[in-house]
Image 1 (cartoon, helix red, strand yellow):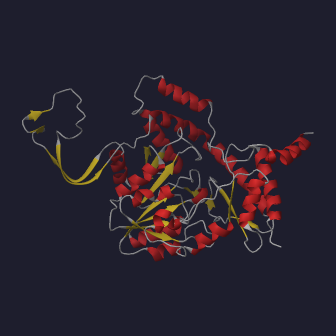
Image 2 (cartoon, rainbow, N blue to C red):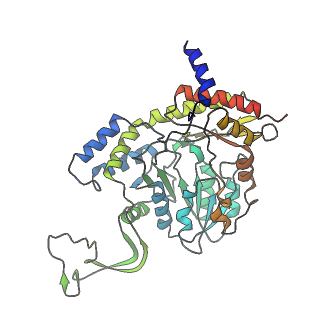
Image 3 (tube, rainbow, N blue to C red):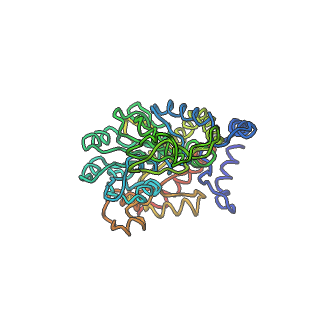
Length: 428
């Protein structure tokens, strides 16, 4: 009876008003542990902006990703913006960036007047090609910016070697990659040279969340970590800091034992100011939830990997489709699930339309290659610049729903829908 009920639901549900297998708005599981964490913070009568939960979350997160320093922030974008500040990037500098990523990856660098040089992906169309990165580096290049797309690690061994050879920093957008490993080492961990900055996001869709927004900057570089902590809370970085003797301003002296929000203004003079911070701090409630979420991480990853394995097994039996290539040294976090069609055998656009209109599977395509975005076209980038990324996005890419919250029925429905839709989209 149960099997019959599922069969009937599969046949009828896609046609029911509003029903679809869609991306869940929260990518992780939230429950009593997170509720208790928030309640403890709210009822503590202590500051909601400063407290030990942040330090505990940073310390535990650093242990999870094997990073020496972890700095909690208000978002993944805040982490990327801080990375650009720590590297003192500005007009005249160049950054080599992957084109296959979300626009949030590059916008903090664009905002500082940096010129982006986009590196094409490999033949699979999703992972940045180290050879293309090497070719794009010039004497003005200050950093390489890569994304672990969908939680699949980029070729870190080759990328780190290139960055060491050319004396540039490596900035990793790890928003999708918490829990992934490459060659046995966690993504976001030690690079062995203190020249990497890894940026994580805890937005609502991510593998763990800190109440919808949050981020973490990880590095092995102690100076960068100290500067990041200063800049996240209105700090000022200057080349020279001269002590004031005596510590006063003109004839005025600080009132003893009164907090005046003056910072270090009574004590030092600054020369050649380099960077000015703003408020990018994580709240105490968010950090408390982050700690609870880290305790769930292994289970959340196991669920995502199980669903991805189900998809892999099914796609291996469907003509004209293939799974995404994953380096044998990599263990993906499976934030997104992407597969590819053979455009000579399957009409990709027809397949997508059939999945959505006939079978109730709501789809996204991540991402339009950034060199083709309106902003980058306005800056001179054009079609043909990254042919691998373009071909895969426009002709081959299919992204299936993937979330730790998906039910077994939803997964089975997506697989059955993919079989039916691919058959109808086969070129005759």
